Image (cartoon, rainbow, N blue to C red; front, side, top):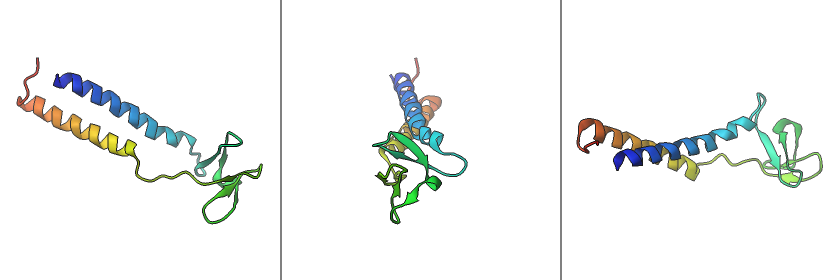
Length: 100
């Protein structure tokens, strides 16, 4: 039962690491890209005009806020899965939980 939970936790961990890591795909060597929903395109930050101290204006005149890179539930899920994998691994190795 613990081994099945370890496999599921590892798969969930891989899924969330891939989701969080996919944000790095849209970063170039010059900085982050800003996604414009009305245009359905991504523009480099340095190519956009600053509308105010927070937002950008795309070439078509749409106002866009930069992406929020704060603490997310994905980060919490990654930490929880990693902690579960560590604790369950230690319990299996020490023999507290018997393995089949």
